Image 1 (cartoon, rainbow, N blue to C red):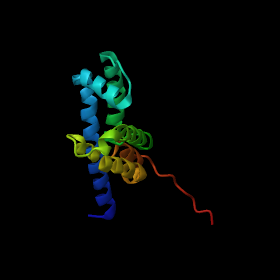
Image 2: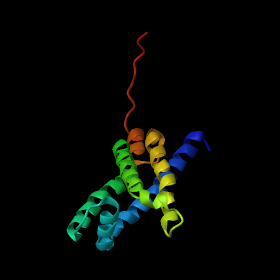
Image 3: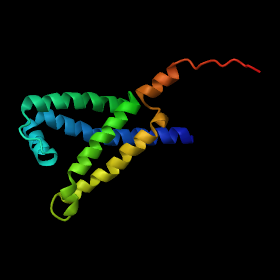
Image 4: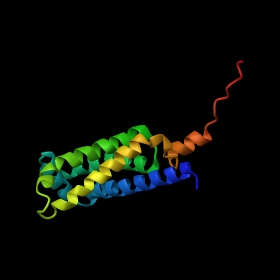
Length: 148
């Protein structure tokens, strides 16, 4: 297998791994909006998140997550997913200060996921098993005339 195919396959696996976490966080807003409200209050200091707001946030987030999973609009969708995960990671800082209290040790899984988000954004042009990658292959390459 060529280096390009190994790289594209690795990036696809990273994108699917990050994406499944975001899918679950998004589904939580629809299936358990009360839990979403508790998370927003505890980690983002936003009180009173109602069901309608959870659904609205979940809808916008689902569009973004599906774009990310498909590799559509990579520069924007990968960047936004990275920003959202950075905010999520930083908002849990008290858990990092006391890692041995249950379930705080689990919060450290945010760091490799954050690294994956950064790697995906930095290598987005090489993530070719994507909607954007298929568009690039389908578009005609510009013809350059020999101007010598």
